[in-house]
Length: 353
Image 1 (cartoon, helix red, strand yellow):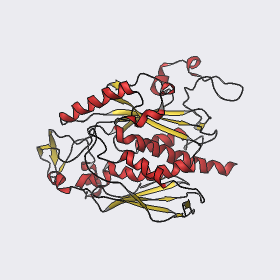
Image 2 (cartoon, helix red, strand yellow):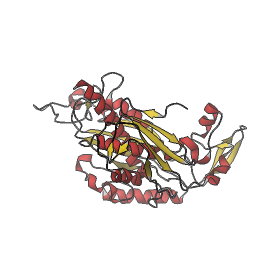
Image 3 (cartoon, helix red, strand yellow):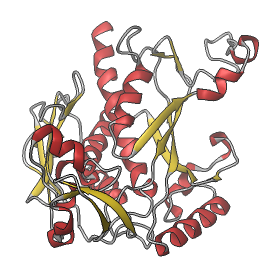
Image 4 (cartoon, helix red, strand yellow):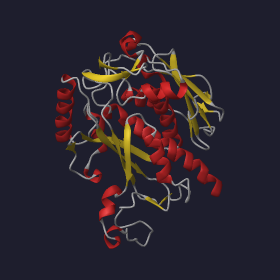
C-alpha cells in the first residue's frame, strides 16, 4: 500500500491499524534544537481521542503517545522522530458480522477489490483512528512554526450554521463545549441535534472552519505546489472529508471582479481578504481561512441493505462504537494537517532566504 507519507521537507509517515497492537508515525525533516512541550502534544491528542463526551464514540483509549527517537533532553535532534500510540480497547468481535460483506459508502469494498485482502476489524487502515498519528505530528509542527496561530472550530452540524464571521468569534471558547463551536448559542443547538441523531441510530455531517494567523508572506509555490492546493490535498486526505474551499470559495463564483478584488493598503496588506490569505498559490500575509466539509459517518446502527463477497444483497446492521458526528473530534485533525503543510512550506521557504 503506497501513499502513507505527506510532506516534502517536513515529512510524516504513519503506520498501524485500528485494531492492531499500536498506531504510530515517523517525522522526518524536523529541524534540530526545537524545544518540545510534550504536554501540549498530549493535550492535542486528548482533544481527538474517543470517549471524551456523550456525542462521540464511546471507545475508551488513553491515546498516550510514546516517543521512541529524535528527542534528547526535551529538544529535537534533527534525526527522525519515531512515536507510537498503543491500542488498548479494541472490540474486534463487533466487526465479525462484516467479515464477508461491505458497508455502504465505506472503504470496505474498494479495499477488498484493490488489495484482495482487508482488515475488517474497525476498518483497519481506513479507520479514522489513523488520524491520531497525524495529530501528534501536527502538534510537533505547531511548535516548529510557533509564531503562526492555527485555530479550527465546528462551524456547522447538518443544517445548523454559525451565523457570524470568524472575526467576531472568541477562539478561546472553542473547547468550552463538547461540539467545539466557539458560539455558545449555536453549540447548544448542535449538541442537541447530534444527540437526537444518535438516538435514531443515524449519523450526520458538518463543516469545520480553520483560520491561520501571523502567516508570513511567501509560503507556497506558484505552479503545482500552490499553498491552497497542498492545504486542499491535506484536508481531503482526512477520513470522511467531501469538500474544501478557501477564501471566498464557491461564493466568489457569483461575484464580479470589482466586488471580489482585495484592494491594497500602503503596507501591502489588503482592505478585504476574499483571497483567503493566498494569491497565486503563495501566502500574502493576511489570515488564511478555509472550510472543510465532512460527510455523515458511513456505519449506522440501523438496518440497511449491503453487498456480500459473493454478490448477494443482504440486510445488515452496524454494531460497535461509532461517532454519530465526526466533526467535533476532527477539529484537532484539521489543525494538525494545517500545521504540517505550513511547517513544510516554512522550511522550504528558508531555502530562498
